[in-house]
Image (tube, rainbow, N blue to C red; front, side, top):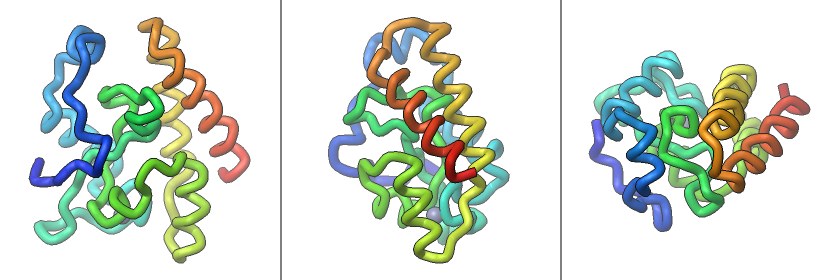
Length: 143
Ligand SMILES: [Zn+2]
């Protein structure tokens, strides 16, 4: 399940804040995300199989301060994870649509709303909170 090779800049070890708040280890978070995403890639909607392996994709990329919380992680196939790079969620949804895929924007919106709420509840993570709120506004225009 965790055979993914993290893209450059995305493989940082969780910081103290993440550990403090997040009891779930990475593999358990990924399993939860796969379940939440209905067993398919959050972007291209391909069902996960032994050949289409789920990876952890940060909605707000780590380079923009996105924490490694379940609220900031969606399950994505490695093809989408690699192709997206550090593109914002809304920009990547546009790109997906251009490729003929149909991401579930309402679902992504629900995850990003939860991320915003979690950053406000936990405090700190200002960059992630601002990015989540910006992505929420942009995803609403795509929903
Ligand atoms: Zn995909």
